[in-house]
Length: 164
Image 1 (cartoon, rainbow, N blue to C red):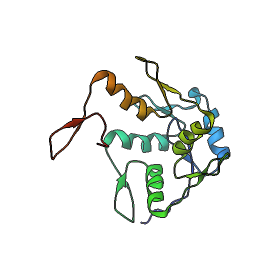
Image 2: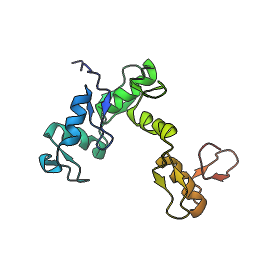
Image 3: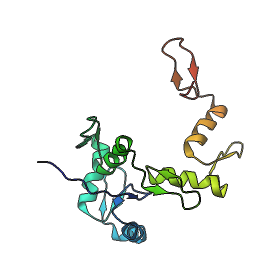
Image 4: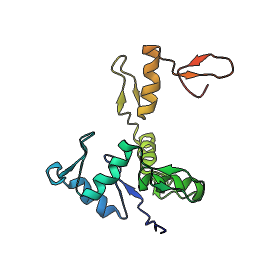
């Protein structure tokens, strides 16, 4: 049986749930924690429906029931498949209201907006330096810790970033 996909371009930054229209995500964000009675026994995340909890649990079990009909890659959540498919389609439904630049994921637009506001919400607790992305802060912290998690298979050197 073929599963038909409904485009849900509005994604909650907190839980990852996706919605078809902006009013639905706004309503979702306003639901108090007490009105989310379905709780994940692994991580404690709460949901408004048992279906949402079941989909969420795929993250913990490793089950990947959603697959890309173009390249075959599989995903634990339908919204992850939807985001992935934009690689193939080039669809970028999230638009910056300031400069008009478009993005394939809402989180990319959120990060982009920092270029306009100058906001750097991720701070190093060791030296105080600030960053627009949490991944940039993570990489920066390696300066302080000396962590070198990336290894070259050719020359056996180690690096703090995988771009080397």
